[in-house]
Image (tube, rainbow, N blue to C red; front, side):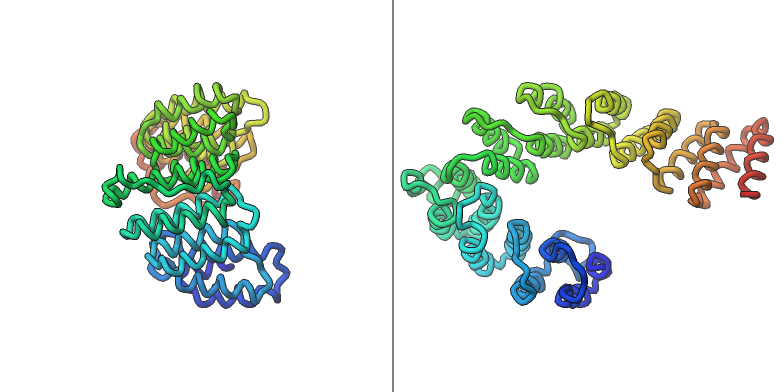
Length: 389
């Protein structure tokens, strides 16, 4: 319900619903808060729901009245929103509240939240403030040993002029400052990959492995996704074929899905089919509806409608039900290559699931039949069956 209100631009109603959440049988109040918060601060086409960190702060304060404790995800979402809005004073105070609410024992996963604020301060020209806050983070947030709390040497970075260089130095201090852990390295690497900073992330990944920590599938998933966004699908394939093998890490459905999507977007859907088959051979790794949908769309985009039809058939065998849009694309495509019989079969399958094709699908079928009069009897029989159903 909150998502419905917020996406319709009715943020006041969404906030009001959250304030009255105690009247409902809500299992996870914190998750409800995070959902609302994410909608307010993330990029959106809806102006009313875009960059509204002011309302997000109000909801954050409301949590105390609802006896609802914010978790790490709550702070991550709100910190990102405040920094995007350049409300750095509020972001700094949010950081301090985080020290005593969730960072009392010093958790490596918190480095992502710390990094968001420190990067924003550097981008805003507040390098000295960033360095000062870094010291507090190492001392109070990460509980870093004294030997790691040395002052940063900015002399090699133009005394503050090389912003990107300083940010890299701060990132290194965050990772190395606390007690090295799988959580801190993974969090930093994933965050850098999500920002397409592949070079920096690779350095974190290498250091992580050199220190004896084994990267998880989530790290490799983030790397493959970053490479695909940069249209480097060959390197993304190597993540599965080479890097994960060397790290003794088994690919997950999500990693395969990322690579399949990347291959399809680069017009290599036939190769993507091979990875689908490879996935199915792996024990405990079964392609989901999303992966099949990506592959069908990719094949249709390359006008490989017969292959798309076969993948759609496999999808149904695995009990994944396609949406109406997928049926529409396949049927229209089959009509365009003169495969009226297959198109009619999928039309029957579609209507048997109480889905109605678009008008353009009917037009494509009629036009295809008119071009091939030999199929009129087949389509006529199908029409009669559809009419009587």
